[in-house]
Length: 165
Figure 1 (cartoon, one colour):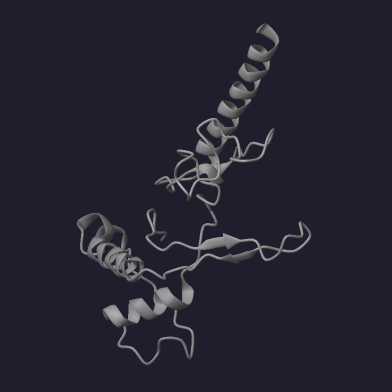
Figure 2 (cartoon, one colour; figure 1 turned 90 degrees about the vertical axis):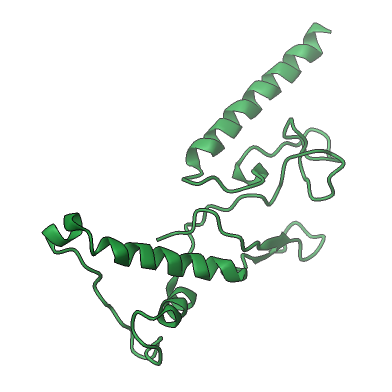
């Protein structure tokens, strides 16, 4: 189970001026309290499906797989149990977006303009999922390819305009 629209926001920061120093990356998973509550609501929805005729007809049910010492102090299937499971076992699909947000040059949170050019640096563009302001409700592969295709078209157009002027 994955949250398609997590509210938690992480960050990526430079740790020094050196290009050889690793950046500081903190995804801050589940830092927004509603993210863990969305997980619990998802579990409750899944558990309600066990009561449907379709699931009953095939004997589908949740298989409990406890890990000793993790969440055993909570009552099984309580909301607190699932919050504990979520905090200890949820992980990311690693579809990061928004670290080089695209938008108006007047927005201080923006890195690239609407033509994917890095603001303040000539001849540098960013053409990947990092320019997306929000994560899509699905895989980021197709939108990232579209961004790349659009960037290629813009680069070709800019080059053509320069030679035709």
